[in-house]
Length: 464
Image (cartoon, rainbow, N blue to C red; front, side):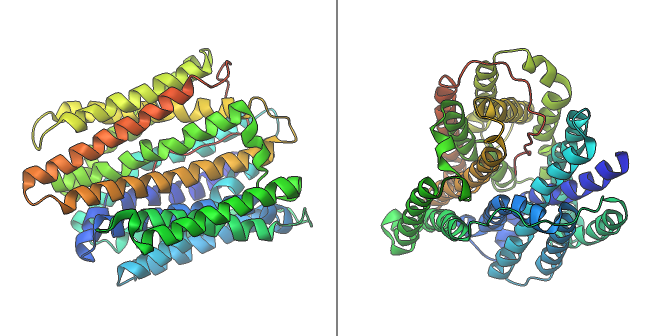
C-alpha cells in the first residue's frame, strides 16, 4: 500500500504543482507575449476550465476502462500537454496546450482518490487519503519557489519541460506497481449533459474575460458568449431534472440546504481565495518591483498556513461546530487581505507575509469543513454523484473568480497612467476580494449545525 500511495501521490503532486509554478510567472509571460492581464489570465483559467470539464467523466472512464488504465492515460495526456506548452511560441498556442494539460490533470485527481481508497480498504481509508492529499498542500509551497527560480535563472519554457521526466517516472512506476483492474461496462454516459455543461461553463467564463474591453459587458464579444453559456446551463438544468439519475449531474442535490449553501460558499471562494492566488504574484512584481524568484519566496507563507491547519489544527477543528469553523476560516481570509488593501508600494513586509499565512489558514479552515457539511445530509447512494457535483462547483468557481477579478484589475489599470494610480488599481481590487469574501461569511450562518469530522472519501485541493 505504501508503494501504491507513493505512485499516486507523485501523479497528484506534479499536476497540482503545475498550477502554482505557472501562476508566479504570469506577469513574466504577460510581458513576453505583450498581452494584457485579462488575456494572460487565460493561461491559468484555461487550465482550470479543462480541469473541471473532465471531472464528471472520470468515474465513467474508470469504470469503463479500469482505474489503472484511466490513471496512466491521464498522466500521458498531461505529459503530452506539458511538452507542447514548453515549445509554444505564442499566447494562443500556450493557452490551447494548457487546456490539454488541464484535461490530463483533471482526470488524475479523482481517479487517484478513488484508487487510493479502494486499495486501502475501509480500515485505512483516512490514512491513504492523507498520504495522497499531502502533495496537494506541498504544491503551493514548492511551486511558487520553483517557478520563480526557473524564470529567474533559466527561461519560462522549463516551467513545462520540468514535468516531462517526473511524468515518465510516474508512468513507469504506475505500470509496475498499480493494481490491474479490468474495465467493465457501466452506466450510460450522459453525452448530451456533457455537451451542454462544458461549453456552457466555458462560454460564461469567456464572456466575463472579454468584458475587460472599453465597452465592458455591452460588447458583443462579452454578452454573446455569456448569453449562450447561461442558456446552455439552463437547458442542462432542465435536462438533469428530467433525466434524474442518468444525468451527468443531478441538480436536485442542490436543493438540500447543506449541499446548496456549501456549494455557494465554495463557488464564492473563487472570488477570494483563488483570485488572491492570481493577484499576489502580480502585486509583488508590478507594484513592489520584486523579481520572479523573490516573489516565489514571498508566496511561501500561504502554503504554510494551509499545511499548518491540515497537519496541526484539523483535529481541533473537528471537535468544533462546523459552521463556526467555516465562519472563522472566511474571516481569516478577509483579515489576510487587509494588509494588501491598506499597504503602499513599500514597507509593511511582515504584515503582508502574516496576511498570506492567514489566507492559507482561512482556505483550509473553510474548504475542508464545507465539504463535510455539504455531504452530511445526503444518503449513501447520493454521495458519489454529489461529490462529483461539488468538485465541479469548486473548479467552476475558481476560473470564474479569477476571470472576474482579472477584469476588474485590468479595467482599473487601463485608467492608471502613473505608478500611484497603478497602486490604487491593485488596492481597489484587493478591496473587491475582501467584499466578495463577506458574502461567504454571511452564507456560513445558513449552514446546518454539525461537527466537522472529515469524510473518509472526501478530498480537496489547495488554491491555484
